[in-house]
Length: 244
Image (cartoon, helix red, strand yellow):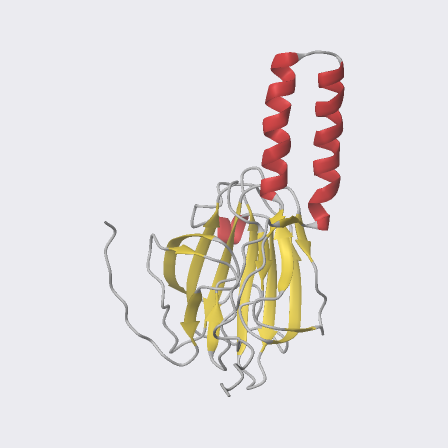
């Protein structure tokens, strides 16, 4: 008698693609765009209707909230956002120094630029507890500029891991971003890859890696929020590469 086959394990189970949902934060914008498009269609404004259909589709795409599979590892730091690695600099800590903030010293700042076509849901880079959230009002310069880290509207987070290591990351508004939203509060426990916030309409996220930790990404590389491994705490692979 043939042996019975065991059910598929997680390593062999097939994964099926599913259409991304629209995050609740964006549903009111989607409904508003849909209503305006509907009335334009009722009034037989063909050209305007065509343009508004495109706008409605774009709004749905902007607020899309795809499922992400986050790699687990004690020291792994995952990318908090989808986008392009535009800057990697050694910098002092931002306005996060203190008991619940980052320590003094030098940090490696990895900047991820999100265009209006990227997913704008931001995720926690590590598992731990939210020790600090600090909102700073500011300008709306191009988020791709270095000085946007100090001049633009922004919101800082500090997450402390189970080992006591603190990691900072910052949501930065851009030219057309006018609202930074946090889904968590100080004191909340989060998992790596968990949704923690959203920036509306083009922006940037900076991650501050502690001394002795080097990035596992390169300038010009694209990241997937909640999936791409940005770094491993305590190691510096010294990666080099080239754009082709």
